[in-house]
Amino acid sequence: MLADLTALLGARKVRGADPDDLAPFARDESHCGAFPPAAVVLAESRADVEATLRFASERRIPVTPCGARTGKAGGSLPIRGGIALSLERMDRIIAVEPGDGMMVVEPGVITGRVMEEAERVGLFYPPDPNSWESCTIGGNVAANAGGPRALKYGVTGDYVLGLEAVLADGEVIRTGRRTLKGVAGYDLTALLVGSEGTLAVVTEITLRLVPLPKAVRAALCIFPDATAAARAVAQVLAAGILPRTLELLDDQAIAAADSRGPFRFPLGAGAAILAETDGDDPESVMAALVRLGEIAVEAGALDVLVAQGESQRRELWATRRQVSLALKALYPRKVSEDIVVPRSKIPQAIERFKAIGREHGLQVATYGHAGDGNLHTNVLFREEEERPAVDACLEALMRETLALGGTITGEHGVGLAKRAFLPWEQGPVLIDLQRRLKATFDPLGILNPGKIFPEDR
Ligand code: MLT
Ligand code: ZN
Image 1: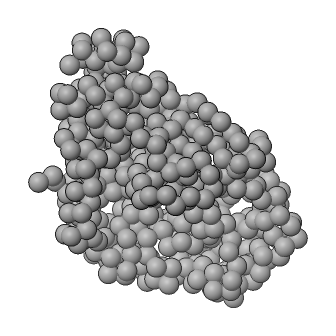
Image 2 (image 1 turned 60 degrees about the horizontal axis):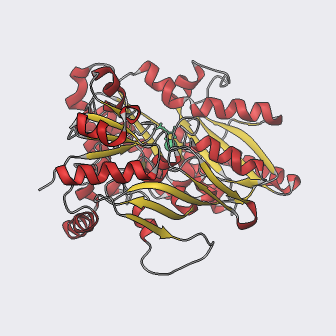
Image 3 (image 1 turned 180 degrees about the vertical axis):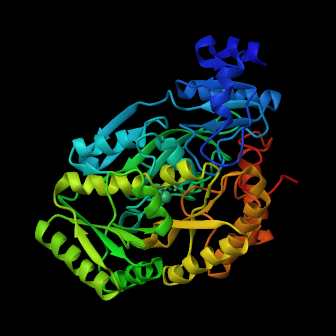
C-alpha cells in the first residue's frame, strides 16, 4: 500500500516506512491510548485529499482525518489502522473580506491565526477553544468546538457559513454559501460541522466574522466553595447581564493553577469565577462588571478582584487556561469530561460529581464554562490499577449528567472516548438514523470508522 500511495502522491507527502514517523499520529490528547496508522498522508491541497480518498475507496482502506491532534475524545485516532490523513499542511488563509464580514481558510490554519487575521482588519472571530494557540480550525469544525466565550458568542458552528469537502469516494462538494443569509436546501454545513470526520473531509471553510468589541474588562470573584460560585453564576444571568465569559474553578482546579502561577489565589479561596464583559462603550462594560461583582458578593463572594489593565487580564486568563495542564502535571492519567447540564442544575451537579468520586474512591475536580453549563469534570488518578474504578466513576458521572437533563459532550465531541455513552442519551431510532446518514455519505464505511457510535454492527 505504501509504495502505491507514494507513487500516487510523491515521497514528500507520504510517511510509513519508519515507525517513528507514525508514532505522533497514533495519539491525541485523550486518555484513549495509542493506535498507529499504517501510513500518513500529509495533504498539501484538495487534489491530494481527493486522490487519497479515491485510492482508499478502491482498496477499502480506513482513512482517519486529523489536524493538530489536540482533541480530547480520541476523534482523530486511527483505531482501525489504515491512513492517517493530516490536513496540517493545508494552512493557507485564502481570503479575508472585511466588507462581507467573512474569511475563507484551509483546515490546517491554527485557530489563533484566524483570530489574529480577523482582528487585523478590525473584526472578531469569537470561538476560543482553550488550545487555540495549537489547535486547527479544521479540528474545531470537526468537533464543533467551543470555549469560554461561547456563553455570549456561541461555538464554531455558529460561524461556519459554508464548507468545501471531499466525500469518501473522492467527489468534491460545496455546502452552504458565501453570503450571511441563505436557506437553500438542507443545511448540510450544519450536518458536517461536528461530524468528527466521519462523513467527509473538509478542505475549505468559509467563516463569518463579527465586529470586534472595543472594550473588554475582567474580574476574578473568589468564593468559599463551588456551590456559592455556581449560585452566583445563576444570579448574574438571571439579572439580565450577559458577560462574555463566566468560568468556574473549584478548589482542586485552583490548587493546581496556583501551583504554577502567574496569579496567586488568596488564602481561603475554595472556588472562583473568571468573568469578562465586553462591548463598545467602556463605561457600560465596566458598569456591567461592577454590577456582576455586586451580585457575586450577594451570592457569597469573599472578594472581587478587577483586572487593572491588559496585562493583569492576560495573567488571569493564563491562569485559567493552564488548569488542564496543571491538573495533568499532578495527575498524569486524569480524564477530562465536557458534560453540559442545565444552568440551574450546576450547584447540584458539582456536589453530586464530588460525591460520585468519593463513592469510587477517586477525586473529581470541576472547572470550565459554567455560564453555559459546560463543565470539565475531571476524574483525577495516577496509577493504571485505578482504571476500573475510573471507568465505573465515568459511567456514573454520565448517568448523573443525563439524569439532570444534560448531555455527554459540550465541546470535545464523542469520538472514541464517549461512543459507548451515546445510546444512553439518544435512543435507538436516532442512532439508527445517524448510521444511515453515515452510510449515505460513506457507503463503504472507510471514513474515521469506529467513532461516535458504539461498535459497528
Ligand atoms: C478547557 O476548557 O480548559 C479545555 O476544554 C480543556 C479541558 O480541560 O478539558
Ligand atoms: Zn473547555
